[in-house]
Length: 447
Image (cartoon, rainbow, N blue to C red; front, side, top):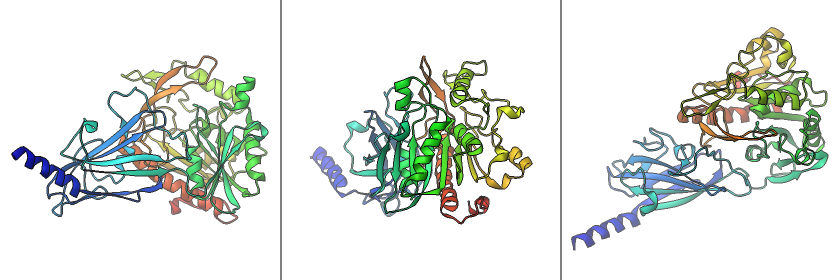
């Protein structure tokens, strides 16, 4: 009878526990509130998040809570006592997601199909658990959808001009300001950031410029005319404001963005955003030469390894050269520039490449806004994306190899950087792409 009573009590608790997530469907950069109700005051519980990505790998996050005197836990207001994060972290269940125990090493979470949502299961368990969740029956569970594409956003593959690209148009007739979105040295067509930007009213084109179809067919790397062709597609599109186009680059994408913003006779940017990159590059070289030179540097003596044998490439461009021919002359920049850097970037010397003094000497420092984040790493992505301090990286070369690269960043600080920089990036883009005719608004007052 005692065993039967215990089981009945547990079943009753399971039936009575109420778990709600609001909103249960929303954009990836939208916060949600997790609320547990109808538990005993002082009750110890674990809130658990589980996600199975498109590659088949499983990710989890969990946190330990103690119910209030009213028998409730509000994840947005109550502190976690342990788990994959501690303290009051409203979105900790998303940004602290990590591969489940036993997964292959070097995983990095990236949404490949932006036309489907991330489906994350939020569950509540009795007690403070740290493992064995699949063997336990949750007290309650809710499936949460997080989207990169808002309703009405249109995804349009682009192949004209030899491009490998995808254009995302916001909902509505337009015309919209445009943006060219460049990722880094890993290549491939990465769409999720462009889709999210379109969800906020900016027509964004994700561009593959290292592994596009034309390179696969010819074996030749594209040159700077390729980026100009992509710009013209945006400029001439009937639903895009041709005089209001920006570029956004991360890592090697920053190198391209700065070069095109300063030297291209075709690309006339309204503004630019550069994340975790550098202006250091030989300005007389072709795109192939610049990329090959940086790839050559990766085999140089300045490459370091940490105790886990993760590759550290941040010293390759150090010290920042004094030779003007080895740096983009950002003193010639004529559009507002937002520079986002993580001070623990272990892949590029982005913190040392802030360019303040160079632009100050040229008298255009009013165009520069720098967001610098202590203890943030290289991969500063849209908010609530799980950080990867290190991950597997496949080099692009005649003899590609997979290496474990150290990106840097402490989880909490990196999460703060992603959330803060994304919000300020959207403000920067809206001011300069939707604002008046005079570029160069005093962004420090707006951010």
